[in-house]
Length: 184
Length: 148
Image 1 (cartoon, rainbow over the protein chains, first blue to last red):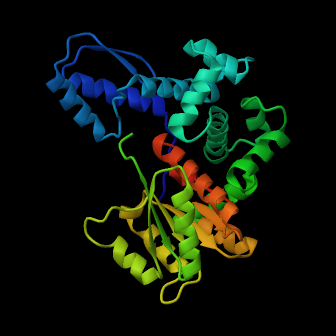
Image 2: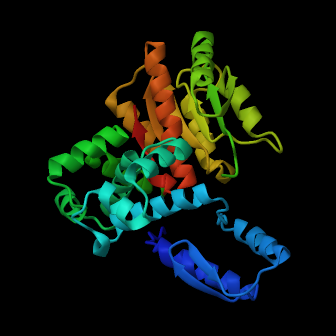
């Protein structure tokens, strides 16, 4: 028997963090996705042990300012793509510079320098990944997905999917379904 | 970022193809370490050594003597220790049906070997960049399918 599961990554991460922080008896407040305020003075030793412990979950404490900003850009994009409440009519560039308080030129250069990709490509990648999830797990039609992700048309989404992955959405669905049948 | 380089392996019996492949990576900006093997037996022996550093991306030629790319793919997919390796099929040509079959068998990427060096560089750079995105952003590898 195979069970197909659906995850809320955000909730899982929060739960793990909360449990671990309590385990280490660190007074804290979880502010948002990927941000925790520490409400006490933390010794280097304690911080080190905590950070070691998180490695098991592949959670890294981001250290320098540049990486923090990159992470904030990524979080803002993921929030924009995955969270319907944050869907805005603003262009991504305006949304990001507004939210992060830097010019888009600055954010965009920094992002390309560190991540080997551009903000534009990262947004497309996230949208296509979300599309894959919706096809596989929620069984939504491409029309429904295009509407949900604010694409101007199904054709646009379909073309972007093919350009990004090299295969069509229906071939993708066929392959994943066959893979699952093979495993059973 | 914890690792500062990407480990790449290619198994291909054609010496020229192996050479072009390593040359292409040498010219890319991305920091990679490339290792090549001339058939599936050498490759699998290496991967099964103790304490080996497994590659981030493994490129498999389909037609190799002794052990083919498909046989390697089957063995790799059966063994949970290889779960994090992204598998790229690197082949001269194949029918649509064959391509889909390799995806169903668990390949993540299918690349038709480019005929010129410039395209090869572009294609390899694209593979490594997208794989890097999956790696650093915790994306679901099961949904990682790419055809170039």
